[in-house]
View 1 (cartoon, one colour):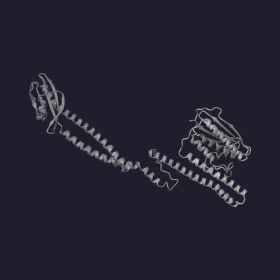
View 2 (view 1 turned 180 degrees about the horizontal axis):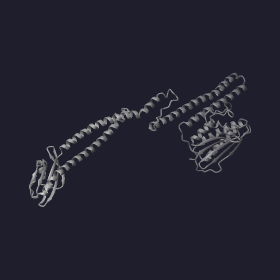
View 3 (view 1 turned 120 degrees about the vertical axis):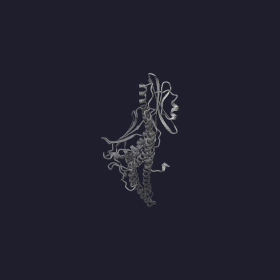
View 4 (view 1 turned 180 degrees about the vertical axis):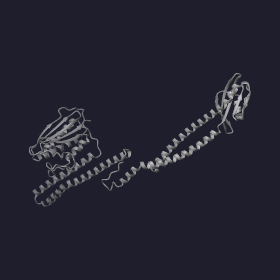
Length: 452
């Protein structure tokens, strides 16, 4: 039932219920305290009624006790048990007539009438006198009934005022939520709108800040996806157009076997470039999506993968009729029990892309140095080439998708701008790091993969 009410109503109802419990406990405590005070007052008055009689029996222990029209409810009994004075009600008289007067207080009453009875034992020269006095509690009960009524009425008024104040305070506290909801309705229309953040450093302002940060990440992710789609479409358009043109030319060269073969070879290169581009995009999508657990590798396995990548790079250099010098420095000593948070396949793919990047950049007769070292907490791959390096202002963007420095690598060289992005994604997925920096002779790429 409460789940169907608004938050403001639930806060108000909850506050009123809690306040009602607190008021009830407070009123019961106050009631008990007032009853105790009134009872003590009645007992004090009854004791005061006995003072004059105590003085009288001490002064004249053998004489008569004079009531003197005081109109008090008392009982005076001499040491011999003779009642000298008795103005107590009949029911109280029956209670005290066989009791020895002593310093005590008790309550008694019949027919709805209640009395506070006090006793006193007075020692005289003739013996001990028993004195009793009674005081009706009717006035105290009447006062208590009036006070209880005031408590109830005051409690109801206070609860009503408290409920109204709770309603207003809940409305004021939920005001930022209402403004956030109204602003959220315009987020789909205004791509730059954000949720309002209150000046107060409270939970709602923290929620708005968190949602704004989440909104910024979602927008950034959406912008990246749009950019990737746009860049991919742009990158695919060139090889597709070239492939279409090559196939059209091949149709015209059916009668010329040599020209037809050349067009088919050119078409194969375009298809290979398309295949590489699609594979890299799929791999990047897999690595930047849901993390997939990978099998850890030993240093021996990573060394084997690096050597395989070096061999493949040499073959690429030979296929391009380029004379490339390779220098390899491997881990001098291997901890057989050490495991690194990357699969051998991913490490080989990472090395392939770094070596391909160096091959695409170095001039004729250039060289590439690969160094793999094991450090206390990681294994580090360093690849240095003798190419032109990269512009310093491009280095922060080198790992972005489809990014290429104008002075070293263009679309015409076959690079798609995805190689370094794939290297960064693989290293990040393994909780590692990759860095690029220019050296005096070229470019240095450093990849660090932590131990598990």
